[in-house]
Image (cartoon, rainbow, N blue to C red):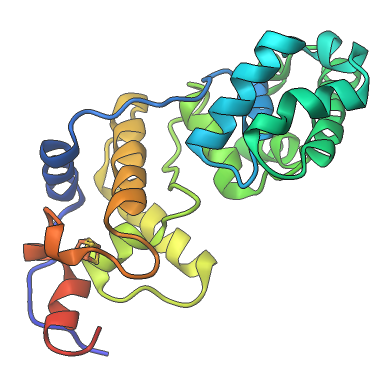
Length: 235
Ligand code: SF4
């Protein structure tokens, strides 16, 4: 499929325009790998809002350290997690699983275990519930462990649309294409890559939604390959 002939917008230019539009973004989740895993299970469906709600409740009711989670009866944990949304009982079980693994298999310190070759580190992270490659990348980047080219898991399509046009059906292909663009064009530094992650995430949540993107209000529409295609009736 060909789209209107527009020059591919460089990733840094995309990020500058998004930053000018949304302002500087800050992460609202804990940077520590273990605490992030707990936070991630505090809400369902997981979002900044649901996870933060459940996280605040859990902190107030039981605490979030492994020994505190293990010592709390499942019903009490589930009740503390209710404010984060659906399936609190299941999330309570997951939290116990996470706490047990960190305490029993990793000496109570997940961060200390995340050293050595990247494949080994990823393997450790992916043993935790609901953590696949995108989640592992997010933990590595925001935890200050490896400045990988993490892509927000719910919107890998954003950069792909801007630079290539309509995204593919296959999630993995979109993720890899976005990852490659970041890898090639965003310096391999924690601050640069967290900035890219947060801006793309914000844009994916706010305007460049998976279905029905709000192109008429978008700050990068002038250089977006997807929009150029849509304008020509190919959207
Ligand atoms: S113009 Fe539309 S498709 Fe392109 S980035 Fe903006 S919202 Fe997304």
